[in-house]
Amino acid sequence: MGTLEDHDVALVRAENPGPFTLTGTNTWVVGREPCWIVDPGPEQASHQEAVAAVARERGGVGGIALTHDHADHVGGHTALMDRLRGDGEVPLVGAARFPADVALTDGAAFGPLTAVASPGHAPDHLAFVTDDGVLFSGDAVLGTGSVFVAPSPGALTGYLAALRGLRARDLVLICPGHGPLVHDPHAKLDEYLEHRLERERKLVAALAAGGRTIEGLLDAAWGDAPAELRPAAAITMAAHLDKLEEEGRLPEGVERPEVPAWLHGAI
Image (tube, rainbow, N blue to C red):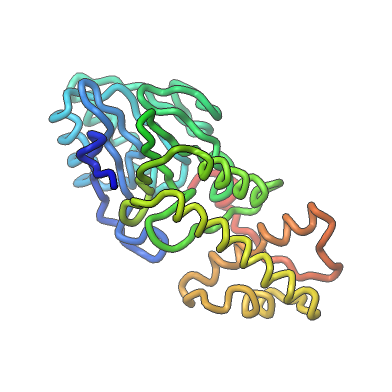
């Protein structure tokens, strides 16, 4: 069982707990002289100062890798860059969609990190893996619970493929965007795959039984979702319905959840 110390990784957790962020957004600081930062976190002065302090202790910053451009992961980017520039640092920024010095795609190297395309939660989502098998999963995999999948063409199919690709890697530790460390990566990825497929089975059964309304389908396939997470469940259900439609398995007359406007871009 690997530890952060074994892999020279530090965790700085933001103070933004909630139903979607769990105990808060995790910012990861990897290596030293220089170190590399994964996700600056939300705009929160105390958090950016804590990240900058860890970076100083580790001999400066080589680059900042962004898993995706949701505000709880990149909102503090400008403030952190300002603090680092005050220390004489001008690190590179790497991302798939967010304005960056380096446009990252699947397989791209960025310092000690290799980008792994993992769309689903967001179209621009990347995970990052190190040569010694540490996965920085962003919101592709959380420490506890599941993630919502944002509807877009091929989103859920792409997400399942990404999970299977990660499962095939020789991983020893998952450092998620929210929640605790995952010490058994393969078991967690198996859990994620089975969870998503079980939701699909329940949804298909509800459709076969004549279910057509949003609320009825949610009750049938996501009836265990807490009330505060039901809107996120509806978003994910929209992605499931898209997948069934893409596969020619969606009956006519199914009511579709409205997708919030912010999901079509960064938040």
